[in-house]
Amino acid sequence: MSIKSVMSALVIPRAIWHNASAFLSLGVLLLLWEGLAHYINIDGFPLASEALLQVPVILREREALISIGASLWRMFLGGALALMIAVPVGLTMGRNQRTAQALSPVLTLIYPIPKAALMPIIMLWFGIGDLSKVLVIFVGVSLPLIYHSYHGAQSVDEKLLWSAMAMGMKPVERLFRVVLPSALPEVLLGCRVGLAMALIVMIASEMIARQSGAGELLFNALDMALYTDVYAIIIILAGIGFLLDWVFERIRSRLVHWAEIRQDAVVPRGRA
Image (cartoon, rainbow, N blue to C red; front, side, top):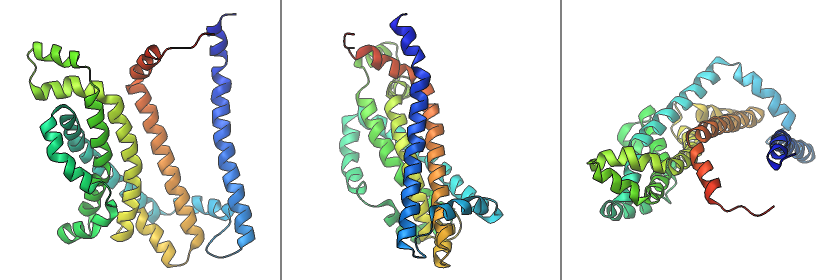
């Protein structure tokens, strides 16, 4: 039997083990939560079983579904706006030193600021509606997108750009037809980081500007001392984050599978 056939036979057991280990770690976490809640025995720390049983109850409520849908819509708008603006900015910075020198001080100044801290200022300018929340999400997602797009553009093979210039491509055309495809693996990595940032900033902004959304739903449950609901909503948000990341990772692996193949070809393999 060849080595290739042996390795192909091991693919399924490895995948099963990977999924089993993930569920095992989650089960251990829930058991620790259950035991610790029994030991502490306070209202602010309900049992894991109680919180899990409350999840389907909340998801059956029409108002809760509308609030979660509104939050996801804001995430989509803020993320789409960041993709349209931040990715070209990052790519341009990676290929143009003057642009990088002009924008780097501003980005360095903004980066360490908690994005939710910008919410009061944006509320003064645009009110407490959806626009303020979308703009905060846009800022939170834009920074990792710019960072990864910048580094992706810097790693583009110069020979590709020389060939594009020889073919008469304009700078903007080179940016989107040569630089972007070559930097796509790094750009998508920034998108994955931005997805997590969007969820965090979304909840924080909705807890500050309490009009509608999952953050407002969470804060209302806390105000009314519905602690089991608070933990159940947190579980729902964690599940949404996990699902979005899982779906995005499946899409990413299909879009840039060529990069993983190329990396495997470049990395030297040890002898058997």
